[in-house]
Length: 105
Image 1 (tube, rainbow, N blue to C red):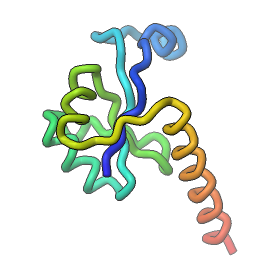
Image 2 (image 1 turned 180 degrees about the vertical axis):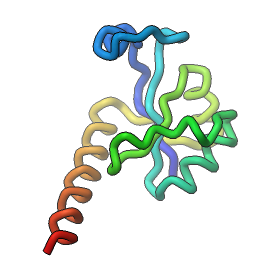
Image 3 (image 1 turned 30 degrees about the vertical axis):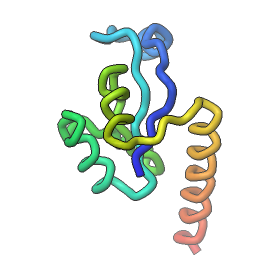
Image 4 (image 1 turned 120 degrees about the horizontal axis):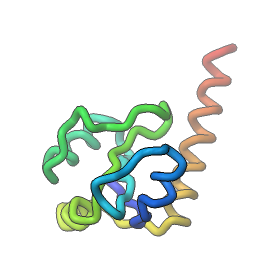
């Protein structure tokens, strides 16, 4: 299942990243079931597969605009609050780290 978190202003990210955005707000879209599901869903709402963000191994995602967020919800993505999103992603991060430890032994 695809999820979208709450919209965030790009101003904070602009300052941190030192770059300008072409839009004022964005959110993250991610999936419970891996990249294939995420990319298929992204294509349904008009995103290009090459736009997937893979810098964090444990949470591949798309940065999407407010309009794409609305479209994602219409197509069935679950809207999450910031707190819900953080809880879900923290759990995923812990599971990822736990898996890394098992792989080393």
